[in-house]
Structure formats: C-alpha cells, structure tokens
Amino acid sequence: MAARHRELHRTGRIGWLRPAVLGANDGIVSTASLLLGVAAAHSTRSGVLIAGVAGLVAGAMSMAAGEYVSVRSQTDTEQAEVEIECRHLESDPEFELEELSAIYVKRGLDTALATQVASQLMAHDPLGAHVRDELGISETLKARPTQAALTSAASFAAGAALPLLTAATVAQANLLPMVSATSLVSLAGLGGLAAYAGGAPVVPGAMRVIFWGALAMALTAGIGTLFGAIG
Image 1: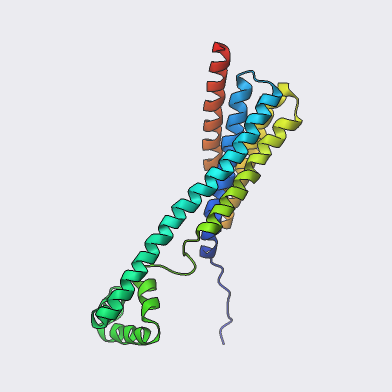
Image 2: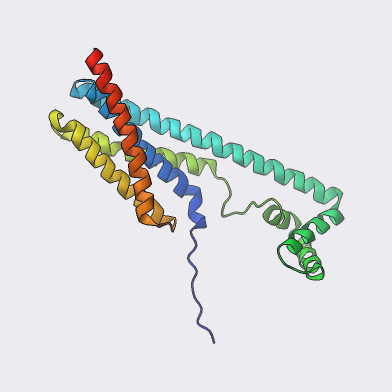
C-alpha cells in the first residue's frame, strides 16, 4: 500500500497574505519616506514625530478603506454573477447542462464521460458546480472585504511603527541614516517572509521590496532637502 502524503498548498493564504504584505510594506515605505522628507527639511524632532504619527493613522485608515471598497466591489461582482447563473439554471437547465459538459470536454474528458459527470454534479449541487467550474469562484479564493480591510490596516500600522519608533529613540543627528537603515532591513525581512509564505524564492522577493523602498525614501528625502534649502 502506497504511503499517503500530505499536500501543503498556500492558496488559502491569499485572502489575508496579499493585504497583509501590501499594508506592512506601505506602512514602512510611506512612513519612513515621510519621516526622512520632513527631517531632511530641517524640521524639529517633534515636527518629525507628529508627521509620522499623522501618517500612520491616515495611512492605516486609507488602506482599510481602499481595501474594503476594492474587495467589496469584487464581492458585489461575484454575487451578481451568481444571481445570473441562478436565473439561467431555473430558465434553461438543459442548456446549462450542455455548457457544463463542454467545460469538462475542454479539460480533457470525452463527451460521454463529461456529460455523465456534469449530470451527476447538476443533480447534487447545480449552482455550486457552475459557480466553481464556469465562473471560477471558490470558497478558498472568495473575496472577503472585512478581512482584507482589517488585515491591511493592522499590518500598515505595524509596519509604520518600525521607522516611527526608530525616529523617536535615536539622536536627531542620526535620524536620517538610522531610519533609512532600519527601514531597509525591515523591508528585506518583510519581502523575504512574504515570499516564503507564498512559496516563492526568498531573495528575489526581498530584493524587489528593498529596491522600491530605497527609491521612494531617496526621492522623498531629496524633496525634503530641496525645500529645506529653499526655506
């Protein structure tokens, strides 16, 4: 008897992994960039920290609202498609059977077997079969707006807290290099962790996040320096 093996799939993480990574990454990058820009403009420590806290709160709320609206729109679209499918099943079940059979034929079954499979699935759960195989909507990948909003807001706040804590604890003379360094290290860890959790290569994932984070921070610090010189 062949030994059974457990399969570890990561698709169930998609609902929370994407907004978590996006929120934490945006929290680190946007808050660190804001702190660097304000500090480069020769602002006081209190001014830098006030800007950072305001950025954390505003960013977390913005991420939550944006994720909720975006994912809710996807949910509404999915629900509308399901309702259309319900009406089609009620008005023309024979055509829906043929449609489902054709899907299985395209996936490699012969016509007779495809018709048999479609008939059995239609007898058991016609709407579920069409939602899954025709519309491509599954419970694992189903849009969850509240989960996405809360995850994104919490991860943004956690990410933003890292550069903000650094700015609050280091000497003002070391604020620019320390916030930059700790933020890039945090981004590297986040990118690697996200890649690992998603089953992707760790090093490329970390390098992508470092590159874009460094670019954002450099541009913002440059703008702050320019305005500081003008002021």
